[in-house]
Structures are given as structure tokens and as C-alpha cells.
Length: 204
Ligand SMILES: [Ca+2]
Image 1 (cartoon, protein in one colour):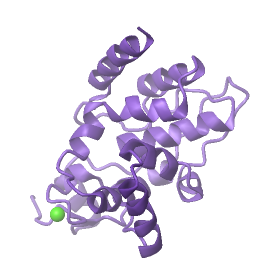
Image 2 (tube, rainbow, N blue to C red; image 1 turned 30 degrees about the vertical axis):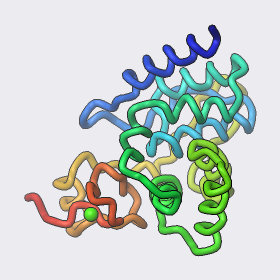
Image 3 (cartoon, rainbow, N blue to C red; image 1 turned 90 degrees about the vertical axis):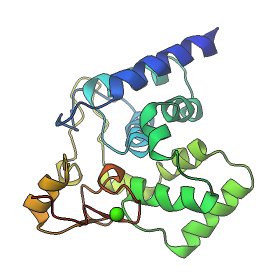
């Protein structure tokens, strides 16, 4: 029954989390009380490829505080449409790892990390658990240094890494060129063929 309720909740939140076009991608209106909750917000970044909004962030914090493990949280987050859509065309473990690095860490995988995670997946690690552990890397913590507060002060957004381009027109207006995987604001939605370069053509 508990699993069923969690499933229904995940479906609900998957609908809630579908971002409206042009909506702000960062909202600080949640509070965190322990380092694990900062990890949870970074897991949110890793799964959804964006920072939390108030509703989504609070929902998953509530689930976690109700006893859902970080592993189960990663699982149920990954059942949402955003994760499923982002990875639906992936057919190999190499493909997963390359995309995890781009989406989560915003860069291409170095060879040692790439071969490590491929072998973990080859040995049966489920993709959502790879995301769960990559989300705990010091590298992601440095990009999203959410501060544990007194449980009442909102988490501050990470302005320097929250660059968001609604579409290719916004990319070209800002950069004057295509957006690369190493650029802040790169996301899969801007790079349909997934080659690491988005908005190849100036749409203006
Ligand atoms: Ca492309």
C-alpha cells in the first residue's frame, strides 16, 4: 500500500513538475535542516536537470522527512516524465554515462570516471542509483553549495549556475553562438540530437 501511495504521488508530482514555458527555474522557498537535505536538493538537480521549484522541492523534502530513503527518492523522482523523456533514447550504458555527465555535471566525462560508471552499470547498478551517487560528488556540491539553515531560513538559489535559456533565440541573444555542453544553461532540450552542441542554427 505504501508503495502504491508513493507511486500515485510520483505520478502526481510528475504532472506538477512539468515546467511551464518561460517559468522561472529557480525558487528558494524551501528550508533544509541537515546536510542530507542539501544532498536531496542536489539529487533533484541531477534527476530533473534544473534546480528545485518551491512545490517540487518541498514535496520531495516531505517525502524524505517521512522516511523515504535517498535511494527510493531517486527511484521515484526518476519515474517522472522529465527523467524518462531525457533518457528515453538511451540504449547503452555508455550512452547513459555520457548523458549523466552532460546533464548533471555539465561537462564531458573524463575517461576514468566514464569507465568506472560504465562498469558499475554493466555490473547491474540501476541508472537512477548511478545518478544518486553522482549527485553526491564534491563537484556537484561545489556548483550547488546549498547551506543548511536553522530550518526556517529559505535555501538561497545558486544564481551563478542557474542560467536558463528558454529557447534558442534566448541563447543566440545572449551568447551570439550555439551553446556547448560546457556552457552554463546548456540543457538537453536545446540539443535535440544530443551531440553536446545546442542551437546550432541562429533562429533569429
Ligand atoms: Ca546538437
